[in-house]
Length: 390
Ligand code: HEC
Ligand code: HEC
Image (cartoon, rainbow, N blue to C red):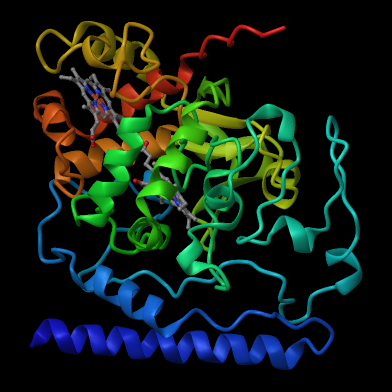
């Protein structure tokens, strides 16, 4: 009863807010019209039910490491994610049409795209088609059952090359069977975010549910074939440049030049070049990672030696180079924000599929500091450069 009224309330709120957003967008933009209807009622209903199925009453095992989830506060009981708003062709209020429609280019690519094309979430642009096999439709346009959205394509969040963004997950170079398992875990309610505010996770789950078996396999095979290469530049620091935590995409952006902001136990993962990474969405663009002083050595001890019995040596399962082994995913040189969320969610139990059971003894005795040290060290590992095929 309580559950149903909660769903109804949430659903009503989505419809109301979404409807008014779309209306104001259309009303303010006589020049460009979206051909697309607002997010279908059925999809919103589904989203509301995903959110309401969470075990919200459960206690968190430790305060959420906000930096990993993209928040500077703790979730409160009853928190829900905001209404989803995928970017598409629609102009927003007060936007400069000339700027949005200006052809843009970037070094190393012969392509040009406008900002309007770059931010289109359901028709993913391709700066470097030579970096990966041809993008299948599932990556470029998203699940067929959701097309005509506005909605998202897989490549819009994870980027076509599967490098991902700190707020989602790096998918390149993961084993096919592992990705298939994760998407099924999401479909079966075995994987969601410990932070109920995190907006993209319910959408990820909704998309996993909308996929056909063929689409699941096709997307997994595509990303599995893209080698995981260097993305991160890690440095220990007490003070870092001033950061802006963008509430719209839960990512840190560097706004200062002098190191004046205390890192204070966090890990901050931020684009080296905001214009490249965020405005142009250059999938090759790298990230700076600031980690606490001393964390790399402490993390290495836990990862490589198991910290004198505190945990289990990661290489036994993840491969001696930590780049993955069989059906077990690589963990070297991948987003520390994502790695931290994974460890926290695994320990919280919001990630609880078959594979997760193998991680239980690994995390049992780890606290937030241990996990922070571990993911700092993992991020600092430079993945081997794949051999060039001539
Ligand atoms: C709205 C953004 C968004 C879109 C679009 C999206 N994902 Fe995700 N994806 C996420 C998030 C968020 C996570 C999990 C991050 C976390 O656990 O904190 C994720 C996780 C994953 C994972 C698990 C990775 C791992 O290491 O366990 C796979 C596989 C994946 N997505 C595949 C897909 C596929 C295939 C599509 C297209 C149907 C897709 N995603 C579309 C946001 C997105
Ligand atoms: C006994 C085998 C085993 C050991 C030892 C192990 N792992 Fe794992 N790990 C797994 C499996 C299996 C998964 C996939 C979990 C799932 O399916 O949800 C995983 C997943 C992960 C993930 C999430 C990856 C992703 O893409 O979402 C992280 C992070 C991780 N492990 C870190 C570690 C660290 C750090 C250590 C060492 C301290 C470690 N693991 C030791 C088996 C292991």
